[in-house]
Length: 438
Image 1: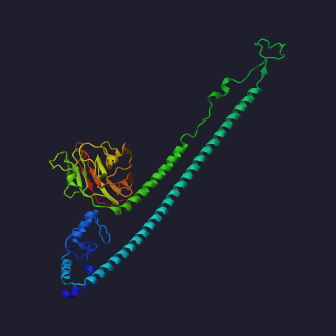
Image 2: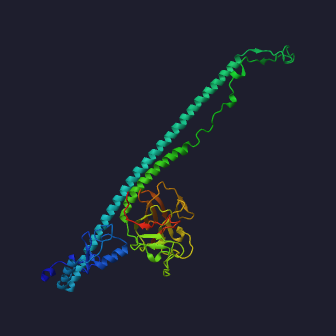
Image 3: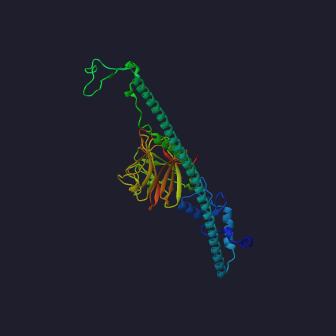
């Protein structure tokens, strides 16, 4: 048995992380095996819960238990493997390094191909969306112009009718009998100087039969608000399209899900962090805790244990029916003691619900947000490289707000469950499953 094991190739006994023979090997649900310490360190370093080999993402981090059968076989192989001459080992190592690099080149080229396909798909989709919007805008503009021109034609017909009516009245008045007025001096005699006769036009029509034209007017600015209303219709269509794209966007963000756990040593003494590090609530009872430089001492906040310094990360937080909360990311170097202003300039990129029901982005000054649907679960997406922190309603997929900045410091997920408000806000914030439900 021992001699048979010694003839086996070395590769099946190597951990793909440390490139050495397994030590306390563990096998995860996808079937791949690693050294216990190597896998634990990898998941801690990358704040992830996916297989380093096949990249399969697990909804919960698997329990790591030593695979005793593999450990026993590995140990026998370690003891019985043939000792190769140093030169031969060196040749094998170099060949392996060459093969690894060739494989890396292939993976990079493959990834570049996928990226190119993604770019082309995005260009096609954007072309389709913007073309539809342009067509809608042109259609709406034509409808506005047609409506205005139609109204102008109606007004022209109306004025023509009024002018015709006035002209008819003038003709009627001209046909009335014209007689000299005997009551006016000089009307019965010819004026020797002017050789003219002064006459008075006497109308047989009664005043009630004549129209009072002083009350007839025409509106000189009939198109007030026409263009604005048409543009508002376009804006509504754009809003619908943006929400559709937002839902699609959130589904694609799912693959960047990370495991987030609360750091009890940063929690304000008013806060209680659950044993599983997934929930935090305000207790209104000041606990006696050791003075930690990382702990908030004035505002009831808490940070996650995991720091983020690159790439893309996504997590979700259940806020339920709470009437006050604050979520987002903060810089490692923020002030945690005393009074401070929550804004990007001070290292805070956060979204808040105030006790009055108002949603705000904590910019400077704050930005009020009008949400059609109150989220019960909020998705937070950090793109460190692109400098964006985005918030989504995880149930509907609707985008809420995005901060744009340049990040240079390590960032931490940030949580504040808000004050109790007489027990109306005692529910906890819960870091939930990282997968969107739309």
